Length: 172
Image (cartoon, rainbow, N blue to C red; front, side, top):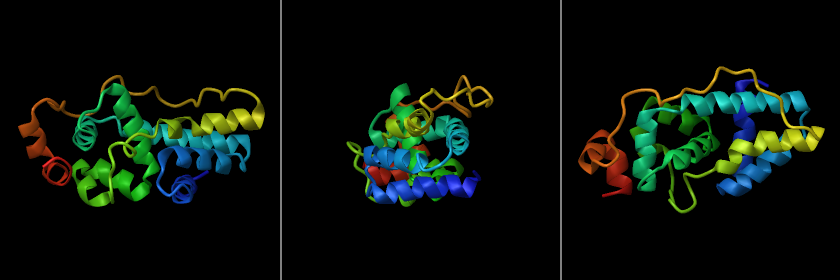
C-alpha cells in the first residue's frame, strides 16, 4: 500500500461517515477488511508513522486551544483525529498548526478532535481477518517526548500569541 492508497482509505471512510469520528473508524474497519492482511499491516504502518510525526509540542498547543485543554490521552486521540481529517489537513497542520483555523470547517469540541477508535481500526480489521493479533510493525520506537519547544499551556496570553488565528476563531 502506498501513501496515496492510505489517504484514499482515510478520506473514503470520513466521507461515508459524514465526519463522525466513531462512524469513520467503523467505515475504515469495513474497508480494511476488504484487503489482504499484509495490506492492513501496511495501512497500520502508515498510520503509526503519521501518528508519531504528529507528536509535537506545537501541535499539542493547537489541540489545547481547539479543545480548551488537552491531557496526554486527549492529545493522543487528537492525533488520530488529525490523521482522520485527511492528507491536506494533516500535512497543513504539521507545516503550520495555527493554519488549522483555516483548514478546518465546523469544529465541535464535543464531537471533533477525538478519534481514539481510528487508532485501533487496522488492529481490529487484522484480527477479524486472521483471528490473531497483529504482529509488531517493525517501526522505530515512538519518541519519548514531543518534538520541538515545549508550550506553556496554562499561559493563555502566550497561546493567543503563538496561535493567533486559532485563538481568534475558537477561543476569543
